Image 1 (cartoon, rainbow, N blue to C red):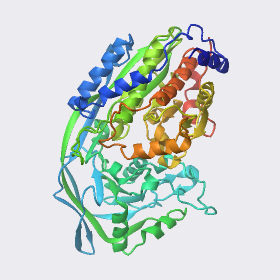
Image 2: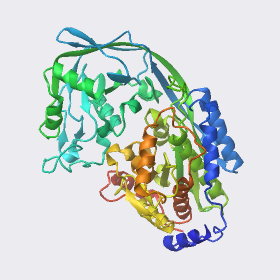
Image 3: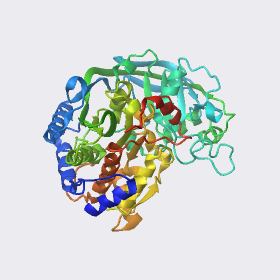
Image 4: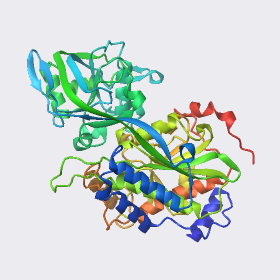
Length: 554
């Protein structure tokens, strides 16, 4: 550790005096934290449940025990996040009408829907379905799938991912978005947002595993439940239902309307595509909904800077998982979220412990634990909307969300390559560990837009995400093949009951990754540097608006 820190000092051009004897991230401590948070006692850490209370209490005790200061509202440890929790009940009616004949839909088999609307019933009466291609409006790319179509009282049906995701070489759309790297336009959240803006009453996305980046079992994992900020749920324009059509069911639906879904996929890759109504097809739904308003909580702790306390470096992860669900084949009901994201939380706690053992930084370190990430980044969105520390003076956000458990790796996976010069910091820190940078090898998963750093990025804060499902790591014992096996095995348990703590995990690699953030945070916390977005990043112009508020003076 001492040698590594000396190398880091040279690489970063900073003095790490007094740090050579500091603590280092401990794999055993990571494991113990996960063991506790992923235990049945915490009931899957769902917001608004007894599991939340236990999780918040545990996190506060941990931060207090480390000697951190409360970083939340009113001098406390938390920030209130007013949530509306919804849960669909057994539908009274959920069916298509195709040329006058009823065709019932089975929730979780043919379709998966939920709602974030504050209503006791999700009701739709014979609403027409309109296929809107990829559901994208991107003026800067000269792209508009909607072409002015009137969606009032109708249901928008779209494809997942970007218009160029399946493009072949030579197609005009190729490279217009992200090629195989999903942009925000490819995310389900964007599709729902745009359908809402267009006046639709519901939105359905055609599922395919390659385009979504995950299988149908992940889609249905929430079990008909959802959460949203209360103010969003009570907006008059909120969709009545939102969700997915299973791929084969979607193909059959289009066929029944005299349409070829495969051919329409190809047509949707053209800029001159126009929406297509599924003639003779309507959807009717009458689904009871239980709703509960609750106040969930983000947890925030800090180490106040000695010279520039209003300038912050935030390290964060989400504390929630999927709670309790139907029993699996082994009778397990708790979906413990051990890796997603108890391990990320353990990393944040370890960062707090290690940084607290060092001399006080010049800038303030903030440690965040977000609620309701699994319901659409709700906790971090709430913070971005009501920040407790000025976002214009947030130096960086460093987010941990799923770390690999297969041992030390020769590389570190970079999510969202080309966004900011924090990538250079990551490369230098990795080099000090004798590691290299590998750009994410599964960019179609759109991970840069799927974790809690993203709401802060949308406000202009430079961000960096470590997320192990972005590709197969090059494991020192077993190489890329070992990494591929780890990834394939983990994805079978993603959002499932088997995402459980395992004493056989080798967390040395996870500790290395957390240590990268320690190096970056320490350097930023004791410098006058302000990381920058790349000039062509969509977030650069947002950050530039607050440039005058940031000082580089010592």
